[in-house]
Image (cartoon, rainbow, N blue to C red; front, side, top):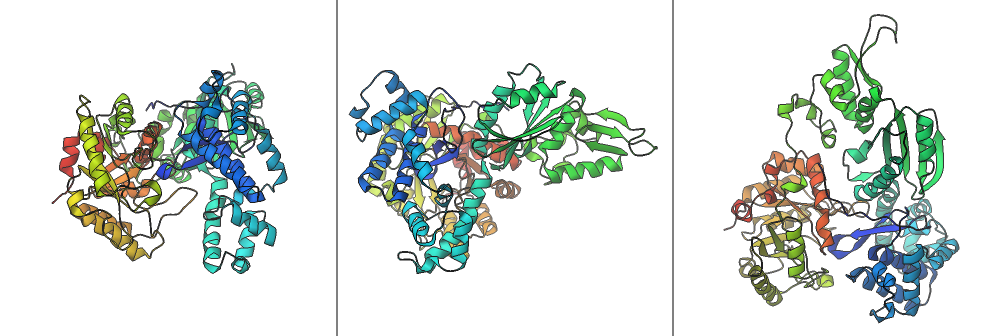
Length: 618
């Protein structure tokens, strides 16, 4: 499978330089990465300004100074023109609303040198663990500063200790409820340190591959591990190299620009730690073992255990060096090499097809015993529509026509414009009057496009008390109605479940978006009986979303597989808040492949007419 990818790298000395991508409700999520490049894009500049604002606020700096950085970050992030281009053209950056002389100079420095001296200096004045504290949901810079000054909290471990000792609740402005919320969020903050989004790991992998392919001793190189299996988050990276000169490969590996420390170096393995704290393990193998090593280190552990058991029953031994027929002599004697140059050789020796890496989780894939049994997993090119996106009417960055044009350029045949309903006040959600006015714009835009369809949609909130945010007579006029839950996410399990199932029973609702509400590394799923949700979707002929945003990937692979088993169509949606946001569809496809979904399991691989016929209405 080949996916087109728009990737950028950065030049920056800070150990936590973020790469930003579009997050939920237009929010920007930051991905730690500090690799070198010629330019810095708008989102990366905005992310650094936001970090500066956080640290200044932690220090108790002048609120106007903090606000200047936050406003500047928002303005830079929303600007369609690349700052790098404006700087190159010697444009007057102060002409941009919200960018004064001071911020303009910093932008020029960032673009030209990749350096932010003021931020570097500020980071030397603040305890290293503060940035980890700010990852705890609900613990902003001000509250973190109070904990630091009042209780001496500098690390997540210390934060846990004072919460468990019930000291936090005694501080002004906190209380027992806030203490409990902070304590519950510490686990998420710790996991955020340990694992990064697959989308962030992808850029690091790309840079590592580019670097190592410059080494003449490298015959072939492939990533392995959880990254190759397409897991949602990645704890470390595994790289396998086919070479006859391990020393030359490792010498070259040691010159990688992002290297912070060499952890260990042996005769055929080398482990390094990057500036971002991510560990990378490099293994060099001979050609006859490359396929076996790739299979072995791709895993998963559970998949490999099953393979070893099957090999033993066949009188074979399988490891990272190959597949061997076991002899009758003492251990190590009489072993005959059967195969291992390719993964296909390894699996063929066991009488099995070569499973796509995404399926290797020991979830029944070994029952697919022949090539004919293997499903043709969905690919990005199978998608022909995108049924969840936002525009400038609420919290999006582009207009209806701009989103339509970008989608058409990406080969899509239809999109649904699904801005938020009025309950989402922070996104300027639409009431009935504004929504109907927008739908008139959609109708007008449709007349301008040939062989492309825009659908009148809405992402309608499910109210805390149950029921939909807009009247049925309004929803009845829509082509596509997304039901979603943004508020009351800490309600009891039954209440959350009733809200979701009630929405699925509404005759005008088409689909439930991001059904469990999780945000990876930031917020756990809300308490919900997903089996009841599945049954409600099935009984009412409704669809369920696999939200492709790398921060969500909701449904997860387990739930998406369950929906497939029950025959509930899945829609892979971008939830894009900009034209660039459409690109995340490929992450949703990767998640769908882990759930063993084919094109037939995903509704938006079909024409809009076919999708509309799948939805139970009335």
